[in-house]
Image (cartoon, rainbow, N blue to C red; front, side, top):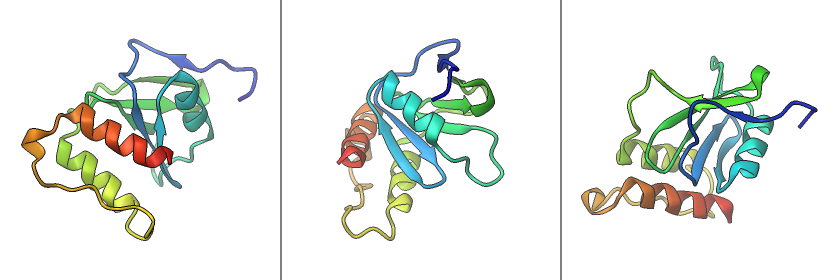
Length: 123
């Protein structure tokens, strides 16, 4: 990172988080991993922020030119289905990863789904 400091504004996310970068999804289990993936992430086409989803399904935005991550005020929480679809779509060409099941969503909490996906991504 440069001499700039990674800043968490307003409130901290609940770990782990899924970080969405143009080259794929990454997991962050602590502030150091979150900072690394945000600072080194590549913006999706047409985006101004790198997005991350925390364990409560809340979206956070990383602002690259300010080295700051903050909760999004304009997005609703991510649904269980939307989080799983994001993951499944990100691995569609990678045979080494198994798709995450969309079955029994009512029996799973968002924190479990995010944690499961983060553990898979970390491998």
